[in-house]
Amino acid sequence: MIKWLAAILGYMYFRFPGAILGFIIGSLLDNYIRSSGGIFNSLFGEKKQTVSPGDFELNLLSLCSIVIKADGHVSQKELDYVRSYFVQAYGKDRANATFRTFNEVVKSRQVSASNIARYLAARTRYPTRLQIIHFLFGIAQADGRVSDAEADVIRDIAGYLQIGHRDFESIKAMFFKDTDSAYTILEIDKTASDDEVKKAFRKMAKKYHPDKLGHMDEAYRKGAEEKFRKVQEAYDQIKKERGL
Image 1 (cartoon, rainbow, N blue to C red):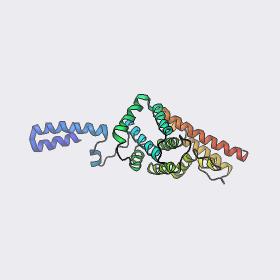
Image 2 (tube, rainbow, N blue to C red):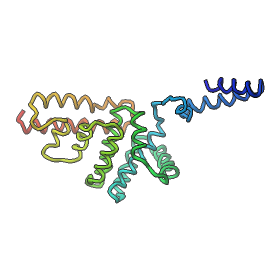
Image 3 (cartoon, one colour):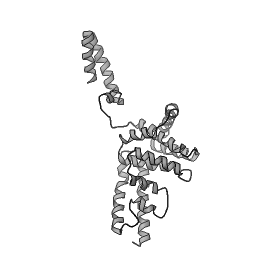
Image 4 (spheres, helix red, strand yellow):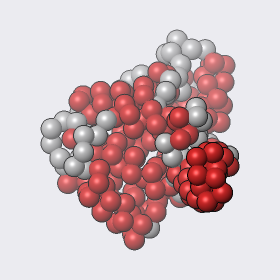
């Protein structure tokens, strides 16, 4: 489309040589738009609802940095957790390349949680975004506890990612153990009937089934398996308490 528009404009102003030049320039622009989304997508109202692996990794790493800094203390255990996760997900070479790019390009800039999360919300599936929140809580807990400041930052990110309130509280409860956490994980009240508990378990097991992340790397599928296991543990705990 762009190359033909450029060719027509070139011919109108410079006749045949201009048409050839316009066609060449337009072809280059077309290739750029197809490969990177380009600025012309915005000008023509087109929104490319995808994210490249490289962009996803850099944006995810940016969210990691926000959570790590949330309580005003950069923990080595949290840094090690992130590095281990990225190496497991992408391999050592690719992970190191992502860290280098982050340090050279992103780290020196002001990182906006809202901009990053909204960008990802428009380009990733809901189960993937649930796993992002689970991963961020994992980072926060890597030093032994999730601080209130970290939980608040992750809550904000979840909102920008368009994560439902009950889904957020369910994942959060996997990292905060109390008398009601099992019910919160299953997204039900403590007054729920036995039948409601069973229905909630089936619903949550389906939501967090690892197959939902079959398109993602191994580390993310393992994260889904962990959420799935937490749901099973919550259900088993409630059954035990109720003598079912």
